[in-house]
Length: 373
Image (cartoon, rainbow, N blue to C red):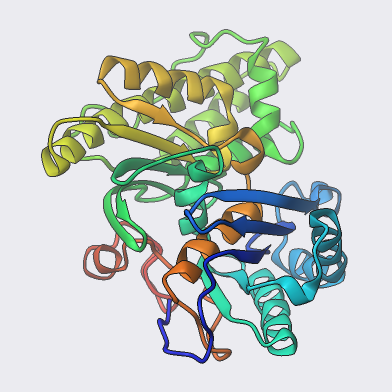
């Protein structure tokens, strides 16, 4: 984020309009920040693109970008109307400027720039991952520092969150993200889109011990993840099955069990690293991102926290998947510190939370677009 000395004065009370368009959800939210730092979400509107992408079994970037452009104005208007405020009352515009599908990010960011210019209020470019990292605050107090497991369609990371803008990577996926593994597994079995909820639903009727699947990196002396091999094992197991509904349910249950085991093992390792860094005392563990909506995974992580003297904190289920309330929240935190951006701020397809680690020790995806994590 470009921290600039602009002409705007920070108000003790503020109304922040958040805009989210990093993938396939067009979202807008109005959030009120009080002088004491407390928050209230006045509106949170999300327009899904599931119907547009369902025929392809996954998100098509070009379709997503067009849908954002078509829906954004109406979604913003609905968020303003539901919040019962006027555009003139807004204090700032916060918009996702990365990471994500570049066409969608550009659509939302350009809309935010237009509003910032026309209303003459600050623009705040928000890291989508920071929105997830701070999202537990939407449910109540969540003091720094805390250990964060960020699990979504594009990212799987363990980070030490020490303060606003102060994030240290402990572990990351070296290949695929957990959410991608869920979606690709659902696609292989023909369960439909979006894949994560379909796998969870099918797994309810299955036997989690029915099929032996790998637990990548389990027991290793680091906190990284790998899901590519597990995803491939699911595909091979399905091809060897009779492809019945019960076979799908057993495979989904076994896959979900394997993911839970991996999360518990890797997170327990990260807990030791985190505790060694911040010391003993009250330890907080946060899980956020779309995959955090999975109840089986939440249950497994809750038990892990109980066994290791950590307190589990998580955003409400409605704020796990992509939403604009978390973007407005991150924007409000930066607004209070006068962290504003100029109108030449660029959309970024990649934007690691821990930029220093990603630059010098990338876990995956280093190329012309920069390090992914």
